[in-house]
Image (cartoon, rainbow, N blue to C red):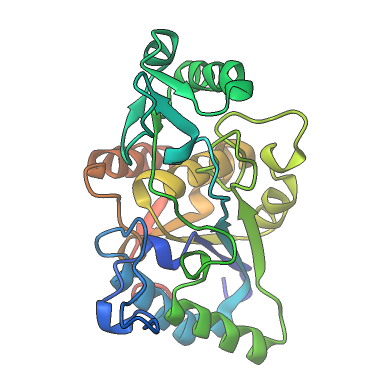
Length: 280
């Protein structure tokens, strides 16, 4: 396997998902420091271990793909989209069901979006992957939270300069009408928006690899859905080429069971697990 083609897929290694120590966050003129919007416990350590891995093993990595959760403030999974029966905005971490929307407990803030919003939560329930959870505004394009974790950014820059290669950045979440946990396709694809359909370009690049190393945040959501969709696209015969770096990913607090279910499911399908220190 000396000449094996090894790809690294990093899922959403962004500031808003990392529990970055306060002393390492940017200081504002007010004296306050920026804070991540949706920090995953353990993610800062994950990203620092991942950066060390890239620095150590970069010569063996043929290509690196990095997905970036990329949102506008007004988004179907953000608080401003929804109002309760009294007209108050939804609080972060509210779960909105189709039954609650039909009953008038929740409605779209913009009446023009009501029918589509109801159709969306109904489609989510048919898909049986996730209910709609209202998240804090996060990974807003152009904001610090959208940026790469500093250690990962530095490691990627060093890799690119040394190999004279470009990192393949994959943006997801730009369509405000659908969630996009997976980097492969949106939770409910919008036929009028190719960006929500299956990302055949990314799948094609990964298909060319002999080994696909996987890291990023969060294990319970974006990592899980991305890996499942890649496995479905590549076919059962190729699942064994996927290796999850278990010390470079963590689940959202309160959703640990989803991460555990994902690892159990995918290892049964043939995915391998390893730590970053085991590889190369």
